[in-house]
Image (cartoon, rainbow over all chains, first blue to last red; front, side, top):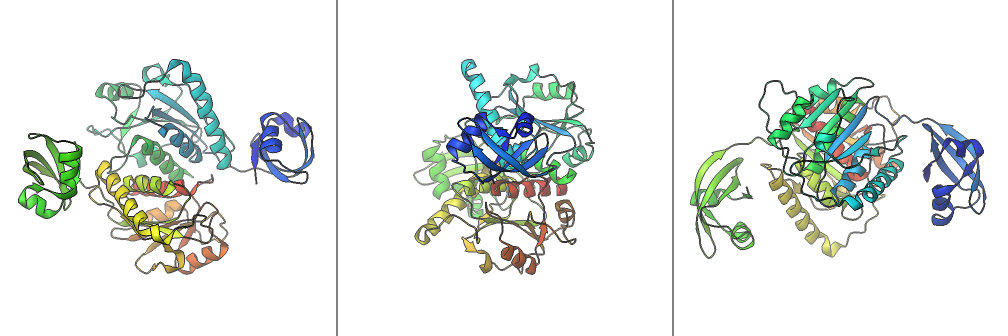
Length: 241
Length: 241
């Protein structure tokens, strides 16, 4: 059944309008009597279309229910900006896997040159991809794709569990990913930093550690940058849900 | 550093030939004095190229070491054949994540029609993708991509931990994925069955249960077929490694 994120006012006034109207009435050519799912404020409404007007659709509510689709903590993915269309794939997968926010980040070894004039369009498009993926995976929350920023410009003060994937492990203070995930508590604000194709520079690793990040290994094999975040989010899901 | 899977005889005779010769000498235009990594029988050899001939390359061994990149059990992914080029992506990700074998499977709701005459070429190409991904992630083992088979034609007798992702859970005997993963022991033969875009039919679910499969949920959100296997493999990695 098609599912749409709507505003609280849509539910209150029993009206579908704007983009959702366009998608339902024009693109999908919905019919009177058809059932769709509307989603607002953590509640899913099963509704029946009662009328299709020029700019709005009227409906009646048949049923409503609450799905719990979220972690009881927040996980932000700091993703070094990857090559090609990998970021799109990362957004799709991460949204399915419960990410709260993604920060596309320019690091020392980021290869991609990002055109300043196209940045805003890109972010708008990436947020649309997150919205579509949230719809598909029936999530109650649409992850936010942050603006593209430099590593040193990110404020880490709000996070209380900070993890970064680092293959050059040496110190005894490193924890395993399993230990780190087990330490996550309700309402925690978790951030996971994934380096670029060429890895973190030594200076960046030192910087992250100085900001409270704990280095950890992501298993015995070398993961591509587009797999590393999924690995971590999947592990969090399986261990904490 | 480039890395090549070679036969034991190549190491014994200090000679690179065949496909590896072509890739190194013709495609990559390697030079005398260059260092490459050769991999054979669980051992990685760091070698220096000493001569480039018409069909062979001579080398000397500089160093050799053993990386442990494998689980101490085997995980087979029974993947319902997905649409488009998703299977390629699944193979790349799963290889990084430590899969032992992938069985592309035709299920009741498989949408793709597979042309009998092209099957063998397809499988050959998919095995090459697994080989490349194994090289990239520095694995000691190249996962095998099985022939495309029907669900009912698979012999499950060799597996002792059988898990399938099933969203319509009801019985009290279901276990969480975490419990199932924790139950995996050394040398176990694990199989994970992932349904197609439309999910398993009720009849298939009953069939899998009759074969000893345990249904489990993959978290609170709905995962696409191409994400479900990665989720499970990542969870196994994080919990067992």
